Length: 308
Image (cartoon, rainbow, N blue to C red; front, side, top):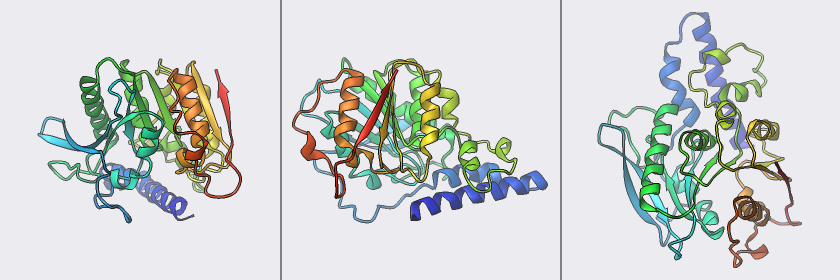
């Protein structure tokens, strides 16, 4: 799979540079780790046809240098609908998430989706690559904006893949959220390195951009939903199970049978929506039932839910 190959190549570069540092010289590693891990894309994704209908483009201030992050606000007609902060993963910017964000609208959420600085139209004043710290700052700024703009409604945080790290950080540090949803999440970057065939190399301690979700998730005190596909070829399902084991109750694991890293809200829409509405006590969006599912052909996708 091209995506899997791409991720592996990024991790190989990280391992190689860490090995050079270990042997005496890769000062380059620290400044480039963020770029290797995020692989930010500024341009529009192939097939993008412009800002979706009904979406408002926003600019949210962040940092102390007058920088701003680009955001899309996709509201529900009902002003009392729950709101969701959407944090995408590596490589994908807003234009690459254009088909995923509406699925959360179809579940009944108003959605605020952002690009971290370094992605899309969100830029640094000094053209720096994104880092774990800067992405956390961006998520925090977006969350403050969302809370101020939407008082009195339920507010949720969603993170996909690498975005799960920023989402978990936010949920652990801010108690204003009603729930945390993470999809295709890993435990940490060192653990991801260990999943490669070069994982025997002792380079984990050299990784400064660690994105340690496993460490932070135990600090989250709000309800958590973890969704993971059993056929995820990028982040092994076992890492999702480890996160579930470390999380505090109330928690729910959506085991999406046959699901991959990128398609769960499409291939398992009904099970996903049911898990969200039941776990967080939301009214289901009845108009989006089985007819909304996209199983990409063949039999309907199935999922197993574990609740604690």
